[in-house]
Amino acid sequence: MRRTPPARIWRATFAVVGWAALALQYLLIIGPGAPGAIPALTLNFFSYFTILTNVLAALALTAPLIRADSRLGRWSASEGVRAAIAMYIAVVGLTYHVLLSHAWEPQGLAWLTNALLHYVMPTAVVLDWLLFTPKGRLRWIDAVKWLGFPLVYVGWTLAHGYASGWWPYWFLNVPALGWAKAGFWAGVMLALFLGIGLVLVGLDRTLGRSARDSGPAPA
Image (tube, rainbow, N blue to C red; front, side, top):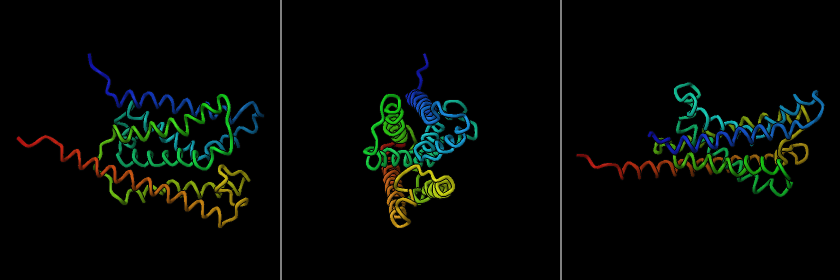
């Protein structure tokens, strides 16, 4: 009997967890309010870096299982893409734990989705990269290139925040903090992204070199 590879089991499990957590979080944000508020609430939902990153993670876990030969499947199989998503979601977990977790105490289903999106999925995606993604193909410059997504997100947050008056995170709330403090926190976050990215590239190169050195000896 043919056995299912561990990577497929892992990715199928956490793809389901990721999509379920996102769907539940969306329903909790929409709530029982007036239908006319749904478009604005939906836009706010997709303006959280946590949500965007978990969508990327769920896609990267799902695509290889469904259509590995599709454009999305090939995209998700890229070592650089998987490492970048691991970097983004590691920052999601660390930022929530250090800067945001003290600000509120979710209960019930809100506690469940919070735990899944900020702790379970970051752990699962980083382990997926560590255990199942081929190593040895990343370059140091990749960690710099991966900053593109966070930089675009900061730009979107500023535009959306000033247009709507709604800010997803206190440390990017320019009207409340002022440009200097918000700029400081944005710089801290970008430094955190870069630092974790460099750690992942270093691990990739080290593990890739170890794999080559321990390969089968020539006949």
